Amino acid sequence: MRTPVTIRQGRALMASGPNWNPDRGTWYVQYWDQGWKRKTVTRKAKGFKIGSPAPTKKPPPEALKEFARLAEVEAESRKRSPDEATLPGLLADFLREHAESYAQPTRNSVETVTAHFLDWCKSRGLEELKQVGSAACSNWLTARSKVAAPSTLSRERAQLARAWSKACELGQMKENPWRKAKLPVRMIPKDRGAWTSAEFDKLIKKCKPWLKDVLVIGTQTGIRISALISLTWNDVEWNKDPNSSLYGRIRIRPEFDKAKRGYRVPISRKCHDVLAARVGKFDTDHVLTGMNGKPIRLRGVVATAILRACKSARLSKPDSPNHHMRRTFGRWAVNGDLTGEKIPIHKVSKWYGHSNIKTTMIYLNEKDDLSDESILGPEDKRN
Image (cartoon, helix red, strand yellow):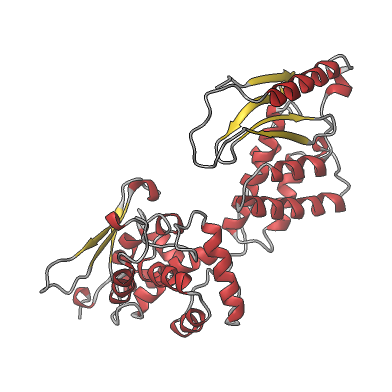
């Protein structure tokens, strides 16, 4: 395979290629024009079928010819003055181009925060990158904190900071103003919702069969969505002891655990029934599958399906559909809706895979003055 060639103008990457895309079976060349627009030209390899090995031959002559033409364009642009050759610093064009560089579903999130920030900048006459300093960033964070949850604000700050880091790499900015912009100390906390048993029953009635299984296992185990859609039958540990009341455990692999240790979650009766019904039903090692019987590759597919089901069931729109399952599991557990008995928070914390019980308290909206009461089991309380 031909080694990719890169052309640089100063610190800005102007053109690269030819590169091979194994998912689409195409060679492509990519470059940035003088209007801060990314251009991509593709050429499909002859006789290539998706799934077949990458070709060992050189890219088609058309791709090489196209890259040579782009190289000439960039070489010509270098002859201009430094001001003309530098990419323009218009704020709106820069941020929109940055958002388009992301794949779904992250792109939707980046486009949302970009729109909020651009509207705020427009109302204050900020149109260029160089006009956005640390003071402007801090002011936006303060204004945004009045309507956004702390976790949302932290994520949006990180996304915008990444955009300015890219501008620094391209030579557009000398330093990242977001590094000096601190999150407001006092922010309005946002209640993290969960479904009640009655709401969940209404939701299930509006779901398709594949989504029902996802929701039941998700709310009965509290597993993060990335681990949930990646579960394989090797992760399910059945209990073969007929005299035991334990149905088994689900193993969470270290790569899906933020602490990188891995942990196990017990299988409830409802979870066991769904798992047993799916054994051998589909030709895949994955426990959960989508509507077509194939593994679920994107967590956004589950989130979109949950939102549609909530709308159909006339339930309020969850702020984070996938995490709604995880929070529902914890609240059902401590309230006794999961097994019929209230489960102490310290056990639920282990099933969440949390290293600190305070994190679990945030999930459950527990207050500090109630935490000790919830942690103690009936046998631990003194008379």
